[in-house]
Amino acid sequence: MPTTAKARIQLRTWQKQCHELKTRTRQLEIELVERSAECLAMENLLLREITPDYEDCDATSCAHCPDLAEWRILCIGGRSNLAEHYRALVGRFNGRFMHHDGGMENNRRRLDTMLATADAVVCSTDCVSHTAYSRAKHLCKRQGKPCILLSSSGISSFARALEQVADPEHRALC
Image 1 (cartoon, rainbow, N blue to C red):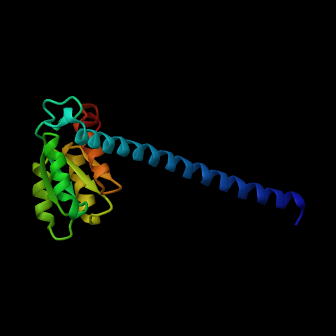
Image 2 (image 1 turned 45 degrees about the horizontal axis):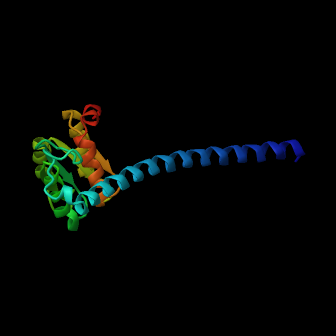
Image 3 (image 1 turned 60 degrees about the vertical axis):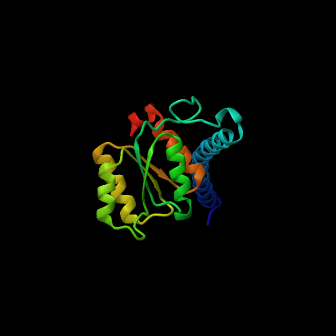
C-alpha cells in the first residue's frame, strides 16, 4: 500500500477520534453544569439548616427558599428510602407532595390519575420503569406541565428540580 494511502487512512482515524473526543467533551461539560447546579442546591439546603436566621424559614417568607406556591409536585420513581426526604423538601418549599413509585408496585391507572392532578412532575430516570417514564413525559407535554427528568434520584438532584419548578422563567419553558 502506498504511503499516501496509509496517511489518508491514518488521517481519517485521527479525525474520527477527534470528533468522538469533542462529542464526549460536550457531554461532560453538560454534566458538569448539571452537577454544579445540584451542588449549589445542596449547599443552599445545608445553609438553611445550619444558619440560625433560616430556623423558621418557609418559602412564603424567606427570600432564600424556592416557593412552589402550593403546587402539587408528583415525584415518579426515585429511591423509596428517600421519599420522606423528598416530601419534606416539597413541604419546606411551600408545595404539596405526591409520589408514585414508577411502576414497581403502583399501577399505570394510578399514575394517570396522579398525573392529571399534578401541577409539575419530577421523574428520576434511574429508578423508574420505562413505561412510567414515557407516560409521564408524554402526558406532561400534552398537558403543558413542567416535567423535570433527573438522571439521579439523589436529594441534591431533587432539590435542584424543585428550584427549577419554582422558577417562573423555567415554568414558561416547559
